[in-house]
Each structure stands twice: as C-alpha cells, then as structure tokens.
Length: 238
Image 1 (cartoon, one colour):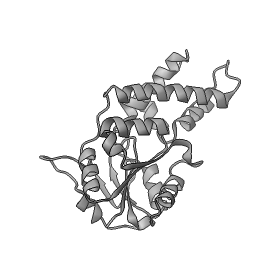
Image 2: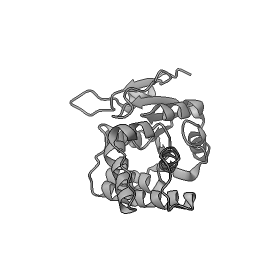
Image 3: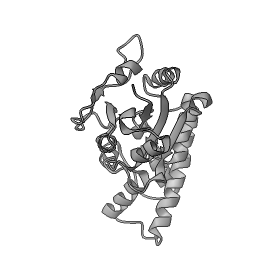
Image 4: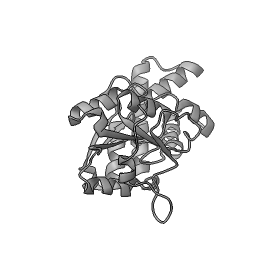
C-alpha cells in the first residue's frame, strides 16, 4: 500500500507547457520589449532543460544576451517574476483545465487517507495557484508542495523527491510518483520511488523504459481510467 501519491505539476496536473508557460514567457518578453518569441517546436526543445530560469539562461547563452543587460542574474530574476505573474493570470482566469482523472484520483487518495504532494521545478507561487484554483481550497489543504528554488539541483537530479520523502517522514517505497517527462521519471527512480507516466503533448515520444507503468492519461468514466487501486498494484521495476 502506498502512503503518499506525489505529482509533478506541469504536464501532469495541467497540460500547461504549450498554452500556459510558453504563452506567459512570450508575454513577458514582449512586456520587456525583447525581440524574442518561443514558438511551439522551439519550446519543445527548451523543455529538455528543467526550470524556467535555467531555460531562459540557456537560451540567451545560445542566441546572445540583450545588449542593455549588465546584470544577467538580476535580468533573469525579474523576467521570471514577470512571467510568473502572467502565468498566474492565465491559471486564475480558468484558461487551463485540469487533466483528465486528476480530481477523481485526488479524491480517491483523500478517501483512502493517502497523503498528497506536488514536486515541481516550477515557481512555488504558480504551483500553489494551480492546486488552489483548479482543485479548490479544501483539496489544497491536503497537499504538501515542494517547488521552485526549494532545491539547488533540478530534475533529473532526485533532490526534490528526496527532500519530499524526508520532510514527509516516509520511506521511498511508500511513495508513488506521477510524472510526464523523462527528466521527472529519472529523478523519481533515482530517489528510489515507484513512478508512473501520464504522457503529455510535449513528452509522448520520450523514452520511458524505466517507468513502472505508462498511461496516456489517468482518465475518467465512461472512458478508460486508472484507479488508486490500480496505482497501488503497479509493481516496481527497480
């Protein structure tokens, strides 16, 4: 029996990347008068880099930094703060719905007294806004959130999952992770946890050979769907 169900955020709770984060990044670039646009294919490539600040830094390292930028760290920090504000407006405006099956599986976990957490490289404010706005304040109170710069190393490093396990006072085999990317999968497995994949638009072609199970989505009736019991019975491939 699992004692904790741990979700990644982007691509797992909400398919945020293409029509959420990418849009907010472009809005932030425009607001700061930068001649930068991340189209859908480019953003798919940039997603190989975990973390929004790290993604922007890598991009500007590759294409060149704006001439007026003297303090690169401060520039990235301010740009990311603006992007987060714009992203939260998208979330709070209800423009990005939960993925199929999320609300149902969360309610099943609550009914079974299984603890809930989110482990994400995204900004903590954005992750909290997603959980609170889309799942509601009652469900939000059930979640422990580990996000953003709470760790120094981003996925595929297991630091964020190790931190969650330690703070929740659980053993790794007690935890089951739901991820959508190879970076997230590698992080969860390196932390000794079981990990199932729900594929998202940007990650469907990634290598998930180490996953304990792979599902297109968690789903809801009357279609095919995955229950909490199904997740509990997934055997570890470790």
